[in-house]
Length: 483
Ligand code: FAD
Image 1 (cartoon, rainbow, N blue to C red):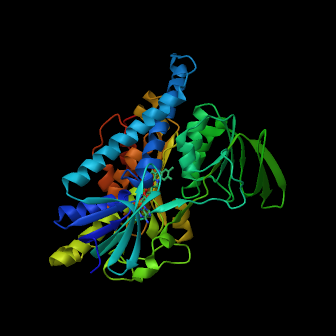
Image 2 (cartoon, rainbow, N blue to C red):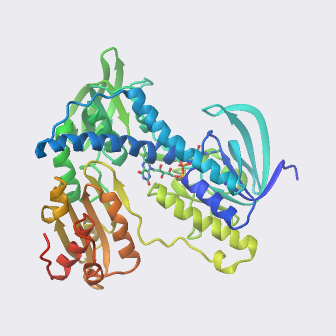
Image 3 (cartoon, rainbow, N blue to C red):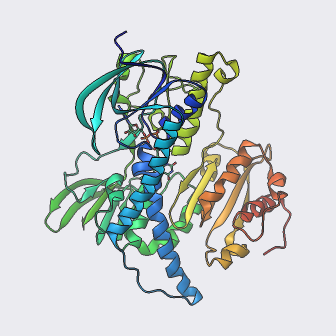
């Protein structure tokens, strides 16, 4: 009682997790309400994450590729960049996809409620209507009763508390807004997001510095992969500070003065026109009234779930960034399908659906830098740490006809096979288009393939993807004569 609206499934948050869950639940015949505070569906990924960053990275890659062509005797002049049009192009990419999502929601008869949602009880969410481009409240409030709920409220950028409020200190959302291109840019945090944005700004003319607390950049990936990227990108950086903490900053008329402290106690400082904080993302678990529904949220703000994406409250599920690492859109989407199908199975009495579980063996990671770095499953570092003996199959792109023809043969493809079972357990690629190829290795791991399966699968010649077959052959000993 007391509800303005009732549904089978309420989905809180319209990002890749939320809209995927809503669409799947609707396809299974359920009445779905999807609550999103912002005007467009798509969440961080579509609006201020994966998609706008790739739109800009594509432009950067083409500019860099045009420069590489000088080696082939083709030169263009220095690019002239109209930032307003570049920004408009990026916004148009986002807008096109957002329009597609809105149409798909309508086609499926998913009710999209624009507003800020929070649980007010175990079967009810209150939605405070929001308007405009932000989260301005209109004062209208609706209570939605649900039979099942799926929490997909995502995450937000972590802010270093000691940095001053200044428009020259931005997070990834600010970086994607592309207000201007600075001369001297500091990136705090040497992870994927920071280095992707750094790639864009550097190609547009900024000099980069990066500061990282750990002892390497992109520490999730094996060092041999990262080394290739680092060598190719050294020209972008004036300074890479590792094992260094950012300890303070001050906004001055000539720039942001930032202070650093090395692990060895050394002190340093620098002056920057723009500072990008890319030190990680924090889940939104504490902002959705979870306690009113009895949903447990851990001390870091994540919501613990089981393999069916169920929280401690049986009829409430959670998916995506809010349930933990890795915070990736493709992970959110697959978790969404599990949650929606389990919820639907229980409501429809479909035992097979109700038994669904999230059982992905591996989730690929990609840095869309230039070259790209992609990896999936066990890394060599992890295999070593876990005491798993692996056979490595390596194919250097210096022997790939296609990579040489492209003028980009700095990369390599690496496959790791469990010595005990001979099955593939991991793989990594560094090189152009690595991200587009890593899915094959993920499939091989999911299918339990061994080196012979992969090596004898005929890959088209001459392609970069062929390097995966070649790496497998390198692991099981036979050789191919193709260049
Ligand atoms: P989100 O996308 O965060 O969506 C949550 C939604 O819920 C948001 O729209 C939010 O407004 C809404 N919401 C939250 N609380 C409420 C509330 N109380 N009421 C109403 N609505 C609410 N991942 C990749 O896989 N590949 C990439 O290339 C990639 N690039 C990235 C680049 C950047 C710069 C960033 C920041 C992230 C990137 N990611 C990438 C990560 C990816 O964006 C996230 O993993 C993904 O968006 C998570 O999806 P989600 O549905 O869990 O949450």
